[in-house]
Length: 404
Image 1 (cartoon, rainbow, N blue to C red):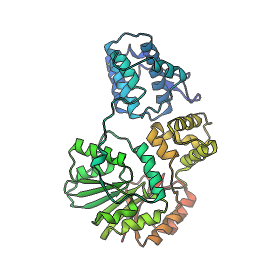
Image 2 (image 1 turned 90 degrees about the vertical axis):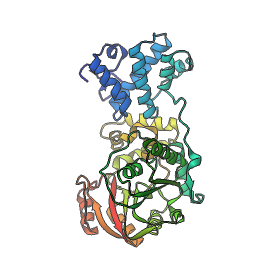
Image 3 (image 1 turned 60 degrees about the horizontal axis):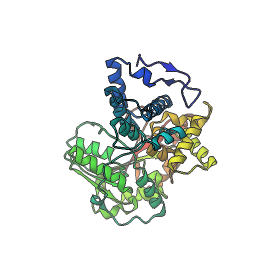
Image 4 (image 1 turned 180 degrees about the horizontal axis):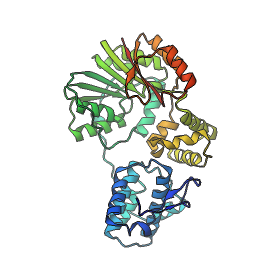
């Protein structure tokens, strides 16, 4: 945005530049740049430390001005509305100073519009009630690890999303299971693109499923069945599937192999299972961040997540854990918790992936090579050699398809 100057003075990390969004500058923007700024705030997440610093500084300045009696004006209210959406969508992850907390304590809802809006920049107000009681359930979850993972995602449903991706249309009448469907973004997108298909999503988190159910109603998607339960109990669903997708879920189980075997038990002959499991060498930044969190003994609380984020901001550029600031998950509470505070995860090397496949009784059909956008046949020897020369070749997760 050409009218917004850059400065080296604002906030964490001190060794990076941040965009200057002070009120004195932005209130005099041209109509075009003003529209760009407000549209950005309403439709984007943080995504960078520079944006976080700039938005945090603007929010703090507006809070101080409003607490001091700044008069409600159209541009102020317009900006506050956009800023409140931005802060809500990033789950209020931007740190709050002691001064801000003191000023907020002196404000209350219902006195004037600007005061209401600035409060909404700091905390959720009148959140929509999720319809948890409407969700179908398998038998109660009993596995200790599954219960711990469930508790985590009940507190922080993941991922948070607004827009439904538009996928290529399909006329195939497929029976598809999404094992670990989370908040429903993926299953609803493919169901919308495949109206003749039947889709079942299973997840441990009722809060995540309730969010997906709400979005299914919002988009008028009726060929999706969302079920609360453990992958280990998936046979209780009573049906079999042409295709099963377990992307980013099995590696959070106590015993991933038991999860794969459970899924294989509901796979039709000739069907396929798409898996995605964490890569040990592709997640060096995340694993360094987890090690830092463990060394600092930081709990998975709102205050703890804030503390770890600030600790990572203060690291030197060459510290491996600083690499996590490149990932969008770092810029929301639910994303950061999923990435750096998970209660259970397994990270794999290529030989360990093939050991899992061999023990599952399934066969590798194809392997997704990072950046190629297509699945290709691979062997244990070939991929092991590739990992030896290019350790992070698969990215953060190995993606592959198994057949029975």
